[in-house]
Image 1 (cartoon, rainbow, N blue to C red):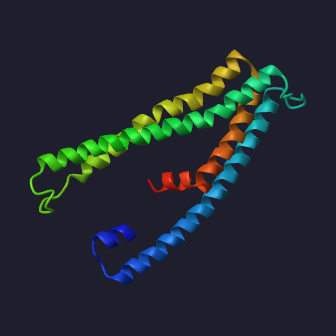
Image 2 (spheres, rainbow, N blue to C red):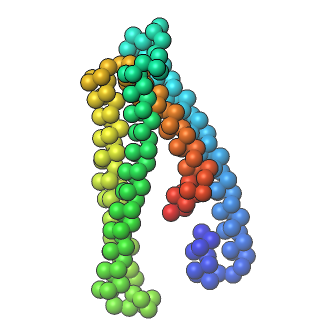
Image 3 (cartoon, rainbow, N blue to C red):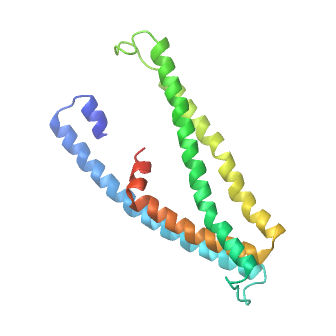
Length: 189
């Protein structure tokens, strides 16, 4: 809102109000993200516990030194980074498509550069919506098929390691993304 107020050249008091609201919104969002990560980790741990009970591993010690379990942990630790990378690539592709559309509109709509004509913002929204849906198919497939594939091909002990590794590295990745400068950059991109 502050950027819009500045671009519209509104008076200073409007900018002061939007800055205060923006700061409050950022604080609320940051607090909410921490709670969301904590609840996601607790939910995932509960699901892991339910899985080990249903798989008959509840009373069996799952030894991380066992090669099958360790392989699962390593695969699971890699998955959140794969999902993050695929998501970031998706954002890049969508942004590129929108840039191409904006350049096309500047070239084809007379008066757009001068501000006498209106841009076709609906087209940019449609590109963004379509890209967001299309580009999340591959991460979704990986998220669904990874545990199923590991569980059926290698077994429940490896799957237990995969789930544990994914929970641990996913939590750390989430905390890094909201606490570091990189997280702030992605949040405001």
